[in-house]
Image (cartoon, rainbow over all chains, first blue to last red; front, side, top):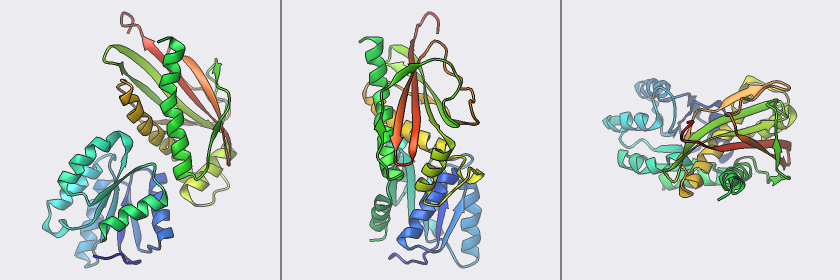
Length: 131
Length: 170
């Protein structure tokens, strides 16, 4: 799957600031079709509704540490469903959780980015997913 | 190691992490002025994010600490605008968690370096306080060191307090 400017992307983070930062970085990279959710529990029905409408999300950018449903639990839920086994998933993580990256890789994460990160780093992480 | 040396050793990861966060996500370099011990608990600025921290040193001594980052409101608004990449001219709900996000990332990065120095770190979620002269609650019997910081968007301060806890009184 290649990179498309109108690729449907869902940004999941409980912090308004990080959602805005990631969305604005993605906009600067040229992506136009962006939605947001404030945690995994909110993201899941959005992903399901988009699938049911025949316009599924094509890329998820999710924080790890969120209330209700964490990023790793959203990833597990997606990978347990045959429809989302290959859905590209970028995990955003704090340095304190870097050891958890091993767990995320095991669960099928596509790539991860550690905070703090620049737009250039985010771009490189995304490019590696969509090679 | 003297208390002063322990304090400096504990503070460095926070200063290094602050530099990294501001350079990477706010596109500005920072310079630190002369650190000073301070007393009193009235904040020196308008908007403050606080993270209490506790843990052990080399699996022996317990410690109690706190990371504080405090901004004048105009500086906070400029930093929020640069970080989010949207122009804000007044404080609003849209930028109210910027301070906590900054302190979260700083703490996350500092924790990595503290771990390599033998500190375990347990921290709570950051707490944000706003208002002129608001009061900051510091852990009991800690020294507070204030680091004045300057960046392209103005001045702000970082405060770090740290104390070893006497096992008999913990």
